[in-house]
Image (cartoon, rainbow, N blue to C red; front, side, top):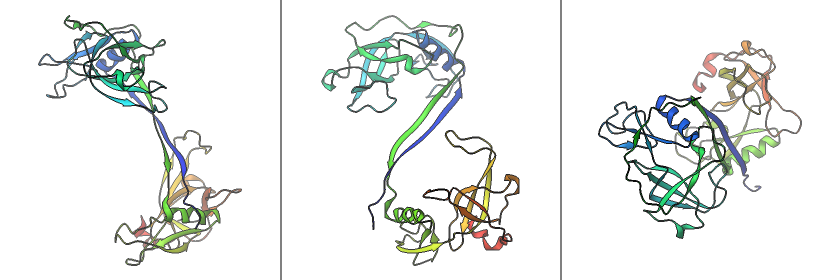
Length: 315
């Protein structure tokens, strides 16, 4: 058998949320080089500010301004920064209790090496040159030889011109996927325009794509079985939101398809039929394009619909 395949994969999506009055004031304040916290009912000053007391769950809105310098309470060295992290060179992740605060803020500390970091180190904010009202307006922390401020946090109205009312944060996960022997065989068969599953020697279900073991019986599955290529739509959904970097016009249909001979439905796009004519029981077949290594979509075969009893156990 050929070497097991691997491939780099990226899962990425933008996370968008609106801000309440506390978070809006905090992020707008960062844009204005002002750090705000919130005072809890017992007098603790929480930074970053929370809308509800983490101990009592009481709503808290009493905003106060704290210092831009603070003390490292704990840290960890990051020798290999990843894409999107605050600094491109090795740095320390630090929890910093800003002067006037009773809780710590997580951010990056720009120092030449781990020997330059210690608990109790005095640090201060390095502000970003361009600020937009985000946590990245704090570019990082840097060492600071000044004393701790003894001043009490000053009350703040939280009012700024042009307040930030919402944020969009890109969530991204980069990783290398190794499908394992069972799915490698599956992918190699797809390259030859065949679909294979693996049969459980106990319950005799044929799993597509194969998993290397039966999830019900816990027994290894190593007997390959060719299934399909035709199958039956068991259930489906209509997609109305266009995916980024996907050249498919909406609306379109994504369906679970039970290939003939398979004991598990796989999912794929349905084409060659108006979206509002797709139905449960529709008989379909794969459509390959060019030198693609997997079906581009499935289309109707023209056969009569499959009776419900023939696929009800695969929904």
